[in-house]
Length: 169
Ligand SMILES: [Zn+2]
Image (spheres, protein in one colour):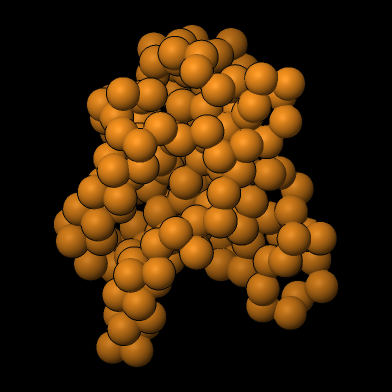
């Protein structure tokens, strides 16, 4: 991707169980097994809040092939952030983020908003599901995935405000 083309951040979970200490190297291995060149996410947030670098931003992503209402696969114009977790001990979707992961995620999102002035959207993977009824919104009944197991738009209202201001310019 070119820096100018990056207009969104998509948040993911690793879809692993609460407390399972997965690292970017594990995800890299799983994604290679699925036939990707390397890990599909650009950043991984470990359980202890550490940020690990994944796929360089210079390459197209491999984390969100759907387009939501954007009209273009998010792999071509978004930064993919994955936190480790997202499932409870039974394997059901759950926001399992540790306090450290929440703090890091908040910091990283705002840092990226500052670094990439064209970003106008901060969404969860599920919000990029196809807009089946073409009403300009991706609603819960249209979700094809539950990732990242929390409401990203509700969590980052500040980022959404910044993004809206930018859209007006
Ligand atoms: Zn995802």
